[in-house]
Each structure stands twice: as structure tokens, then as C-alpha cells.
Image (cartoon, rainbow, N blue to C red):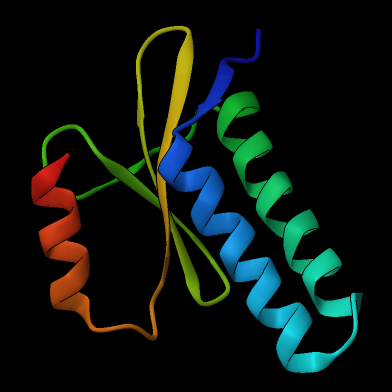
Length: 102
């Protein structure tokens, strides 16, 4: 049985900002739509497939790589909690600070 997926408010906002950035940059909805589909498929695969997870150095957080983005999440027996979506082209020290705050 698939796990339930719960997005944090911050992760929802980050995803929205990423898609908005690409919409404004490219003046087209093509890439934001494709990226949104990729992110949805990646999150769905976390819920459906029980595969080894890449653990982070911060608490119980795991990471899923999708193109230039990291999907940071925690999970228990029935639920996957999406904590953040991080653009890997940003300063990595910002991610460390963000994870330490969670």
C-alpha cells in the first residue's frame, strides 16, 4: 500500500517559487509544467516503491535527487513528509542552516 504524502508549507512555497521562476525566465509554461510533472513523479515513487533511501546528516531526513533539485523528506510507516525542495545551484551553506533549523 502506498504511503500518504504530506507537503510542508515551506516545501509547497519553494516548489511554487521554483516553477514561478522558470515561468518568468522562459516566458513559457512548457518547462515549469515538465518540471512539475517530474517532481510529482519523484514524490509518487517515494510513496509507492520501498527502495533504499539516501540519508542526510540531519536527523531523519532523506533526499531524492530530481534534475538540479533535492527533495528533502522524512518518513514513517504510513507517511512521507516533504520538508523542502532545494535547488542545488544555490550556496550549500544555506541548506545546512535550513536543515539545522528543522
